[in-house]
Length: 116
Image 1: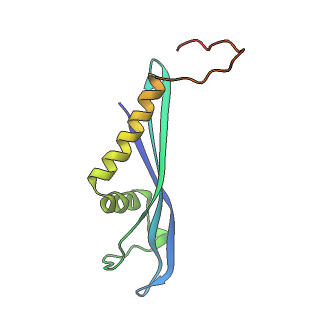
Image 2 (image 1 turned 135 degrees about the horizontal axis):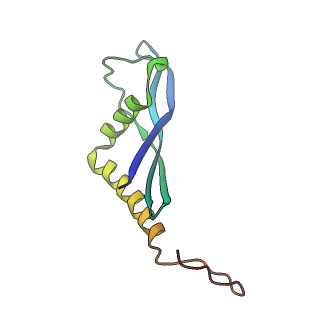
């Protein structure tokens, strides 16, 4: 089973917008998936940004009270379930290729590494 960690702690914010200070409008997200198989840990990461819709701010949360969980929720809601699933599927596919490689990099004149 792959565990996904969404890090949405880095954001761009308007200094002032609609009477509020430090209004987050863009999220720099990092999603890391990890799993353990055969006693070995495998991981893969995707990164990107997501612009948030701030046209109708209700229940404004001051920046110093924001949590990663809250910004993850905003980011995923803006992306939609399909894009969130696509990101996590890409990570799962990368991990699967790490566990079950279909290609390797070799150097002529060097020994072939053992298959793990």
